[in-house]
Each structure stands twice: as structure tokens, then as C-alpha cells.
Image (tube, rainbow, N blue to C red; front, side, top):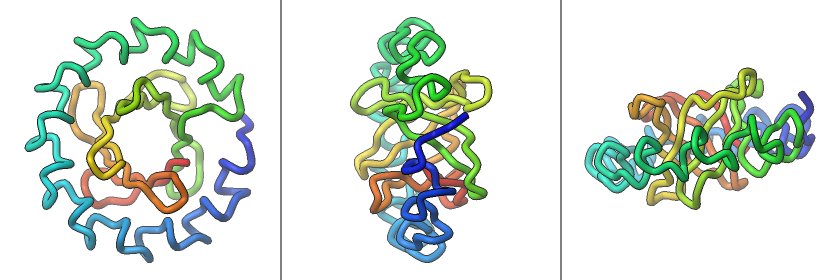
Length: 176
């Protein structure tokens, strides 16, 4: 699969954390939840779904795809890449969502914006939804698996993309 070179960290060093240390949490502590407690859900309860029920799909049904079908790709085909090729990276190299890369700069996932504060995350190989995210007060996202368990956190970087953390502090990739 081809993606636009400006969105591929292998070709664009500005979005490659190996070359651009401003988007690398090892070097830039402002985007690292270990050092910046304002982006760490353990310390900042406003971005923690355990304490902030507005970003918790168990308590807020408007962000729960079981109850809100407009954010559920099973019911809303405009946000389902199987039916809408404009958001499918096989057919559209410049999808409007994010591409998610692991730390080896391998493309592993992509996102679809389901609403202003809600993203769907699809596996790049199978094109099936594997996670979803709810925007938090820090312009990042809390990422849930399909069983509504918090699995990741996206922290906004200086390039308009995100640093992807598993749990609260384990850096696993970047999203552009």
C-alpha cells in the first residue's frame, strides 16, 4: 500500500521521531507523561476516564458506539472504510484521518474521524475496527479497545500529529 510521502516518516524526517526530537518523548519531556504530569492520567484526572465520566463510554452513552449508532461503523457506513473508499487507505492515499506507525516506522493502523471528538481506529491489514478514541481536554485522545478498556493515549505533538503511548507512559509509536 502506498501512502503520501509527506505522511510517511520513512520519507519525511519532520514526522520521524528518530530525526525530529521535538516529537520524540525520550528527548522532549513536554510530550512525555512520565515527566509532564498534565498529560498523565494518573495525575491529571480531567483526562482520566475513571474520574472524568464525560470521556468514559461506560457512563457517557453519547461516546459509546453501542448506544450511539452515528459513531458505530456497523450502522453508519460513512465511517466504515469497507463501504466508504474515501476513508480507506487502499483506495485513497491521503485519507483524512491519521496513520499510526509503530516505533520502527511501520504502518500498523489508521483512523477515521467519526465526530468532532471521536475517532475510530482500524487495523491497516484487515481494515477492521480494533479500537476507538475520545478526545480529552488536552487535545489528545483516550483510546479504548472494543471492550471499553483503556489501552492507549494519544498526546498531541508540535507537528499536529500525536505520540502514542500504551497505558500511561510506554511510548509505542506516532500518529500523523
